[in-house]
Length: 358
Image (cartoon, rainbow, N blue to C red; front, side, top):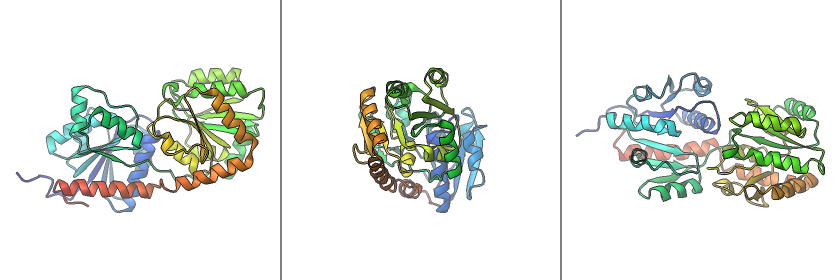
C-alpha cells in the first residue's frame, strides 16, 4: 500500500502542550527558530493561552496552532513527521500516528524513566526515535526498555545578552558584594532549593557580604519566601523574562538539583562565564567538570557547597579561570549545532519512511 505521506511535501510538526515557559519550552523555541533559518517548513501545536505560541508567532515557514490536549490530535494534521517535546503531548502524537501513519519522535528531557504502564510503554516503542538530552537520560531509557531506538542530542545555549545598566541596578538593589544566583522552577523535590536555604543560613555569619538570589516561580515559592523573611541574605525575585540580566548580575551559579536530565540553564550560566556549583546527579557531570568549570558536590552536602562557595568568593583568579573554561565548554552547545543534528535526524527518518523532505 502506498504511503499517503509520499505525495505531500513534508512538514515537521512540533507539539508542546506544557503550561508556562520553562527550559523545555525555551529549547523548543530555539530549535524552531534555528530550523526556520535553514528553510524548514514547520508547524507548532502549543497549548492555548500559554507563552510559547505568542513568543514564536511570525517565524518564517511556521504555522502556529493553539490547541488543548483534547483537540491536539486534530491540530497536528498530516505532517511528514511529528516531534514531541514533552510528555503531555505523546498521546496525541501516538493517536495521530494510528490515524494518519505520520511517524513521531520524542525528546526526553527528564532523568526519570517513563511510567511502566503498558500503554505508555507502547507509545514509546512506536516512536521512530527517542532523543535523550544526555547520556544519563539515555541510560535510564535503555534500562526501562532495551527495544527503544535512542539518540543523544543535548540542549543549546539561548544566546542571551545582558543589559549592563540593568545588571548594575540589580546588584545595587541586592546590596551584596558577592552574589550566588539560582534560576529554576521553585520545586525542592526536583531543583533542591532547600539546600540553598540551608547553605545561606550556614554562611550568613562568616560571609555577611554574600547574597543568595533565587529567580523563578513554582510550588515551593511561598515556603521559600517565608524563609527569606527570616534570612536577609536570601532574596527571591519571582518569575521574570529578564534571565540574561540576572545571569549578568551573578558572580556564581548554584544548581543543587536532586535529579536532572541536563539543565539547560547551566549552559546559559557557562555561556555567561559563571563558575557553577552543582550536584553530581543525572546529566550535570556531562556539562560541569569538577575543578575545571565549576565544582560538583553530593545532594544535601551543605558543607561541600559552603566550601566551594567560600573558595570562589575568596579567589577572583579561580572564578576567572573556571568562568573562561565554562565559556569554552558552552561553545559546543549552540542552537545551530542542535538544529543541524535534528535536521539530519529528521532527514534520516523521513527518507527511511519514503517521505519527501522539505
